[in-house]
Image (cartoon, rainbow, N blue to C red; front, side, top):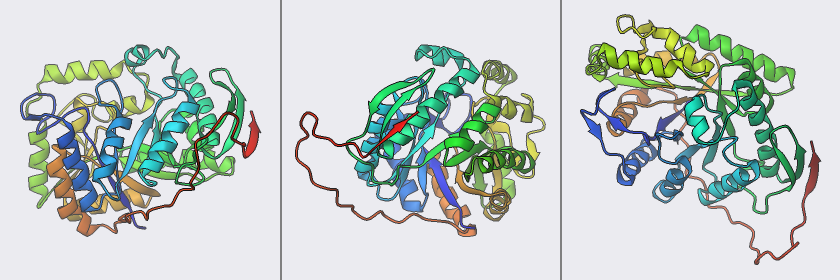
Length: 381
């Protein structure tokens, strides 16, 4: 099976080492453009743009990089509770049209109570997933051309509709990651691509089997992706040396502080990441060539595949054999590591490289006037 490999835009910071400002790099538009254009040129299928208060806005970053890339797709975050599903659908359709069908969307419910409170979200874990389910039902239907009346506990709309269709039909794909039971239920019902963080293959298989079974019970199929870091070098020894160098400025106090902060989240996936290493730096190879050192201080994806090109390719195939089609990779610093992945790893993969999308001719129309819009169909909740 051919695999698609995405890269990562470091809108929350970049550098040579974790947990220190030494070797850090300014993140401005010129640098993000360099990373995006490198990914576009090397054959990456797209880029994940992170979200949160520590990041530049994902939507604005994606929009700014559309004109300087040709085939790269942009995976940007949808944040239920922060924006209405109808407005989010309009923005999604606009980004899809402006990019000529290169927009992808990643549903993010959040897990940090303090950050969520700063955005006006005060729901507990289960309620956030209930809200996300309602949000997504409306978002999907509006993008698919319906006029939607929906009355839920958290989302209420009447006559929600979209006047300008997205390029991708029936709508751009929806991605999502979450390890809890409510998250898996949401994925089974509504998501196109389910993402997992880089746990050992046996744990990933268990999670994918659960989501696959839940989706089948609803008559659906879900595709799968995985989020990992990667450290690839010409030899395995060089790769492991680079891994150790990445955390060479971390002391026990910095690790303990980071782990205490991460423990406050109610994210099941984050707790699973922390359990892989327990905050200890002496047993970080948790599975062959799978290294948990990144997770000592970084939230979210905390594991990396480490080795030479052929070795990392074998590990990727192990995940692909579980049904994973898309690998979202990253490395520090992201510009140099994109080239290392392209030059050292890609030749050993059956890589799916996206084509430059053809220019699509959109239907001409004059200015819309009051009530000059006929809905295609009506959907009731």
